[in-house]
Each structure stands twice: as structure tokens, then as C-alpha cells.
Image (cartoon, rainbow, N blue to C red; front, side, top):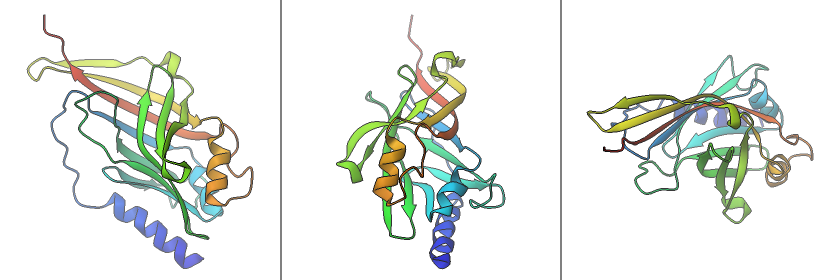
Length: 205
């Protein structure tokens, strides 16, 4: 059990330190989320043998002493897919892995919708259906900071301080799929915060 946890934690750190990140120039349709999990979430999951990490175009790092620390947090940089043509990044997943029974749940290709206040993702372990996985609890009050790069024709809208909670029913679904005791992840449990950057074309006059 302890060895499995060490291996899984090492995998997270390996993901975080894989080479130097190289970003392409911003393109219309691209978006990026800088997500920080709530203090204590990683420790809660780790106490049940579950580690959380990202894969496929996203990077992660540990903030604090360890994921088992009461105030430990995970930082995710996730290119987020969209619903219109022109989005460049796809294939990012948030993964929950239970080291005690080798079960995992993937939240594939998360899509953030600031209008509806939802983050949806496909879950292969639940028939690959795309469903709301997180709720942006302060979506109605988020205001963007907008910068225009007229030379490149790109408008960047940055939303800071989005608060995220588990969408209705997702806590129970994750617990069931991972083989965790009922109620391990409470309904609407706090997941973390996020800063969201969206790039779009500047309309020509």
C-alpha cells in the first residue's frame, strides 16, 4: 500500500517536471485554466488511497509539503477544449486513481462554460458521456480583464478567482466508480479555484 502511494506520488511529480514548458503564440479559440485544488482535498483523497493528477497536454505540481499534508494543494495548468473550430489543445484529462484497487476515473477534455457556470467533461468509466463535473459557484459575478493585441489580432479575456465545487451527483459518482465508501466526497464539496484565459479574434471594423 505504501509503495503504491509512493509510486503514484512520484508519477505526479514526474508529470510536473517533464521538460521545459514551451507555449505557442496565442491563437483564437485557445483557452487555458490555472487551477488550484482546495487545501485538504488532496489529503482527503490520499487518506483513501486516491491520488489525483493530470495527463495529456496538462501539467501539475504539488504545493506544500506533500499531497498528504492537511494544507497540501495541487496546481494544474490545463489547456481546455472548446466548442468552436480553431481550438488548438485537446486531450487533457484530470485523473483520480485509487491505488488500493487500481480503479481510475478520467475527466476527459474539460470544457469551461462561464455563461452556464459549468465545467463539463467526458468520463469513459461512465459510458464516456459528457456531463457537468464542476460548478463555478461565482460565475455570475466574474468580470474579465481584457487586453487587445491589435498587431496579432488577438483579444485576451482573463477571469480570475473562479471558485469550483463538485457538480451535483459527481461526488457520489466518483466515490462509487473508485470503490470508495459512500459519502467520501460530499455533495457540492469545494474543489478549488481557477483563473481562466480565453483568446479570441478582434473583430475587424
